[in-house]
Amino acid sequence: MKYISFLSIILALLIMGSCANNKDKKKVLSKTQKTPTTIDVPTFNADSSYAYVVAQVNFGPRVPNSEAHSKCANFLYKELNRFCDTALIQNFKARTFEGTVINGKNIIGSFSPKKKNRILLCAHWDSRPFADHDKNPENYNKPIDGANDGASGVGVLLEIARQLSLQKPSIGVDIVLFDAEDYGPPRDKQTQSEDNFWALGSQYWSKNPHVYNYYARFGILLDMVGAKDASFYMEGYSLLYAPQVLKKVWNVGHRLNFRNYFIFEQLGYIEDDHKYVNEFLNIPTIDIIHLDPESSNNSFFEHWHTTDDTIDKIDEATLYAVGQTLLTVIFEEK
Image (cartoon, rainbow, N blue to C red):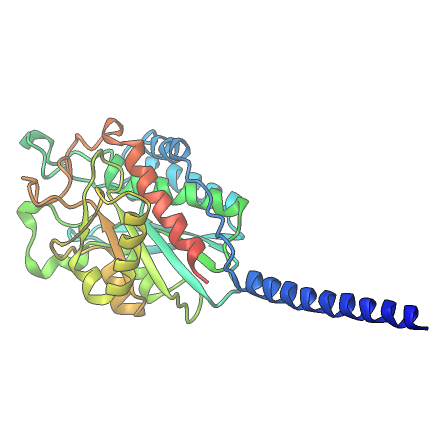
């Protein structure tokens, strides 16, 4: 009996030790479960983005009411329809500064359209009818290719759409390609009161969004995001309407070692599409736009509104910096 009692004591001690170990394991498991999982952010494909810029430029100048404009609109819609959960063309008519009625097309694609938690990504896809800042006055009335001013932002967003079709983020995303952004009056006819002749497509969409009562947590506009060594200063209206969004995006850019592109300094107030999204829809929206304080061309990218805004000015490294930053922002949203 003493031997049995001795074994019982040993078994009891072993069981107690086992329970203690199990408690320790539970503590470890509990701590492990609280550790945040690593976010899997897709890798932005700059080659693909560049190919989308080339495809747009190959249509020729995308001036409203032109054949190139119509063909490019069909191409953009087909690409968004291929990648997004839903896609549509929002047709509208607008009157230009000279009284011409143009047939505009805002092209829209959405991911997870039923989710209320959404963000907005946008760019303009039309190109300027006038090279009114060209060094050669004989080119002032010629339309431009708009490789950087228009096509670059769209090229980034089409590649983002392709990536989102392969890996869905946790939030809803709307991509809006605005038309008729660049049909404002040439510089010899510009006055302060004619600002509303710019960004005609975003004005229309902001007053007539594709979804009734549309709202997004924030928006990001891309404009001239493809030139080599581009400098993205903090634009004035972006800081005024959406300072937290601006700082968030710039911080992500710095974290990804794109600090040479995203510069923590303010430079100018730009009458761009985001201004109307902020004012009419109250969606805090920023503008990632190439600004250069040393530029002789209105502080914009060197070939802005000239016949030299051609495909050879597009740099894949810049497309990658912008695209990877946006993908990271999207997938880090909850």
